[in-house]
Length: 444
Image (cartoon, rainbow, N blue to C red):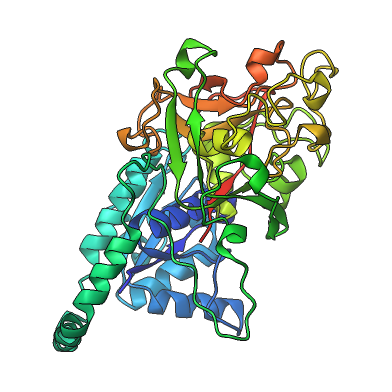
């Protein structure tokens, strides 16, 4: 049974961090975390819902920022957790200032408990701090239900072993890759959800599960997620890099995706960033709603995607969505057409509203993958050949862990910088008016 933690925080100090921690615990450590902006347990007055959530959680986590303990809401949550004998874990943020004396015994109990320091301002070792929190939660929550379910599981296993071995062997053979199947960069192929006979089901090619071998075999498929349009990128193979490009684009390697995935149709805009309460230290270069959100660090971009229930794309996902199985040099084809991209020669040194170059759209329906704004991706900047298994797509845990940016920008001075394979990089806490991002998400 999945452990459940209640995360208490003050919105003024910790809203983005609370969401980041909750999403990471769920996605990477299989730990459910209650955050009041992301989930509730039904109707009733809001304070009652919070109290029920604390009571039904296994433990209580409190983010402590500069003014957290000034909040009556947070103090009431701490009191309720203490009254119900919940294990309490304080997370001391970088701007936390210890009070001269605890206002209540419950707060004192929290502050005296084993806790974690998280350097959220400098974005140093944030991922390690969340991993340490996950370990503390696992250690604090005993394994449940083992005695009660063991006999039932054994009985079920005995029944299944007798009748299921042959079927299991058939399934294994059916799903086994061919001997010459290229290395894939994604998880094993998923199973299409079963439906009843009254529900119309698109065929697997339409859903993107069947590998396509050329761009022309795919029709653009777009859906909205919380009001944000995303396009589906189908399973398939492509050559990562370019033998005609820069040294860091070589050697090329064939990579395959067994699963489809979603990627934003447009770069994240100022309007979208504000609508989802994105958190960034600096204001954008332009305040127009339809222009891409710039002046943003890799950490801030990643945090925003997580707030949306998404993530930053890997470098391989980004390039595949831009070039496809045809291995196009530019999102629209292999010939440079300057009107298809927003770059140095046709802009007034400012980004354009997203989608302003419709002829430059990629084969999956993603706009501005050449020019307008550089885009952060999740991947660490490392030499080719690209190897998904070497840790380059794991979270950043060290200062100076350079991350890749892709696609070129409105100040890029030539077609070489605007190709689908060109690579650039910055340290993850770097920002400027030329760097933005788009998000991706798993198909499921």
